[in-house]
Image 1 (cartoon, rainbow, N blue to C red):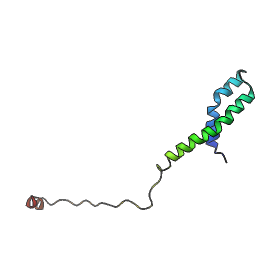
Image 2: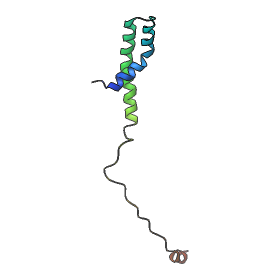
Image 3: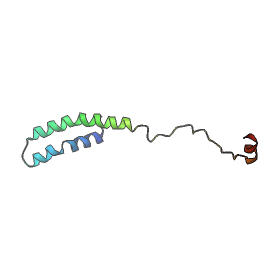
Image 4: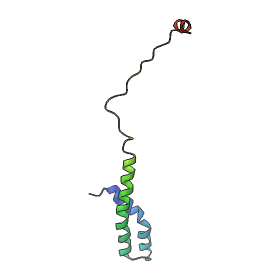
Length: 81
């Protein structure tokens, strides 16, 4: 099934043709053809965007290894060096 976001994006892509139809500059079939061409293009573009941004919201199941800071003893540091 086609996602609603794809249809909305395709409608936005074909909006200039729809506007020209309102002004009686193009025929309705040309507007529909442009919309039908815009649907697969919008689907590919949004799929690419979803692929790129897929990992940004995920959190890992296992937390990172905790690091506990330990203070350095100044007297031991002087003896070593």
